[in-house]
Image (spheres, one colour):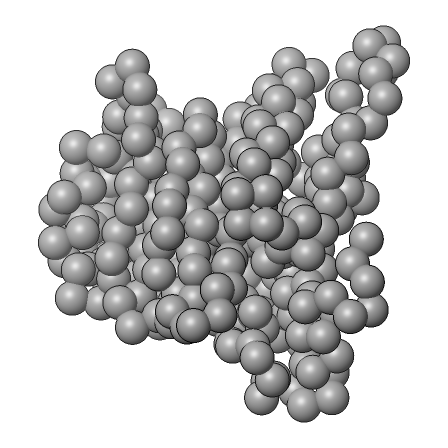
Length: 302
């Protein structure tokens, strides 16, 4: 656990006393969005949508301005089609530097990160795992300060096997986070961690419980395995009651999350779409909405 004199505790104290003008900390705008990869956007899956509006060139013309209007310092992207990444970045590179997950076995769908060019943190190193792109960001100052950001897209599905896959994917995330924290000489409990993306789970799911309680519980009770300690994370969308996020997915529920470690202060939720505050199923994608997910964001004090 962090001591009362740890950097995390001091940042939170400054945040409480001084609001957003926090000593030694900065306000970071972070967003996440599952773009819906073109190879998944078929008429058989979305029969209500005119094929013209499913075409990537049409959807890209909607996606690019929406990404720019997010006005975020860091954007986590999911379902980025690898062969289309260069064209996507060419339209964003005047604002952002981009990092794409390194995929194996010719898999054409990846996670990505956009980092604003004038953001005071620079990318120190990145690591690609099966379902995450993990970046270690270092503040551009004489005193090193790190932030660990992962764009996440977990296994989909409601079967027990899907929960088992998500369990192993989360286990891998924390294993790699621990490794990078050790490299930087910091305890994972004192690290500024952000996991953002499409977690493909409801808040009633066991993996959600694992993240919020700081221990991984094997989804198969029959295994009788002891919980694996990690570190507690907070679901930022539950912390701002002014603009509660009630849906991020077309079917009317939340599948996308931004999780942070407790040493990161949470400001207001960025409801980047009016649909986010109303749990009403929608027929997306559509003429005006290019994905079956909503972009969502938050202001963080790091």
